[in-house]
Length: 160
Ligand code: HEC
Image 1 (cartoon, helix red, strand yellow):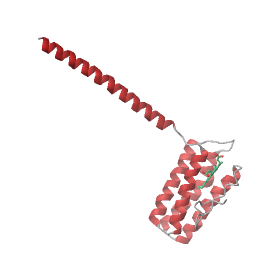
Image 2: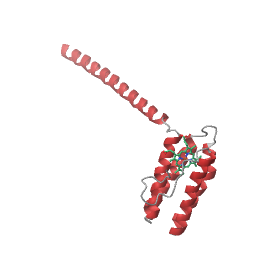
Image 3: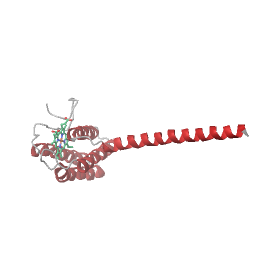
Image 4: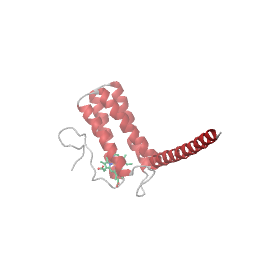
């Protein structure tokens, strides 16, 4: 009888302890998820990623590696979509709207050219993407940030 009683108490204690530990665990998972969801990189950080993907699209085109160019084009497209979804305006400039009207059409045209697989058309379409990056920099009073095709030795696809 005594043994059974103490076993029950031990079991109850263990169950209670487990429940406490479990709820703490769930809580901390929820906190982590909230923290991850609420982090949106600012404009300059998103631009850094855009530059990175654009550079890799360029180098894939220079190497005429279609599979890689397709892959990085897709990443750049997603970066543009993230920008449109997350930054409506900055310093009074309508970032989402400018990206939608200036950059997205050139990315769509580059996608079509990649689908066709004609390298001289792909290079022309890529040039148009770079022109739209720089035009938006001019439009948002950041004309001193000049992106180029990234072919050659400068470790960045940018003029300094
Ligand atoms: C909506 C207009 C717009 C478009 C489109 C745009 N940019 Fe920008 N970009 C900006 C603005 C505004 C800044 C300055 C951000 C700041 O002041 O924090 C910037 C900053 C930058 C920077 C400086 C940050 C750094 O990491 O050095 C780079 C590089 C850059 N953009 C690359 C690009 C590339 C590449 C593209 C095209 C694929 C592009 N941008 C398209 C508006 C634009």
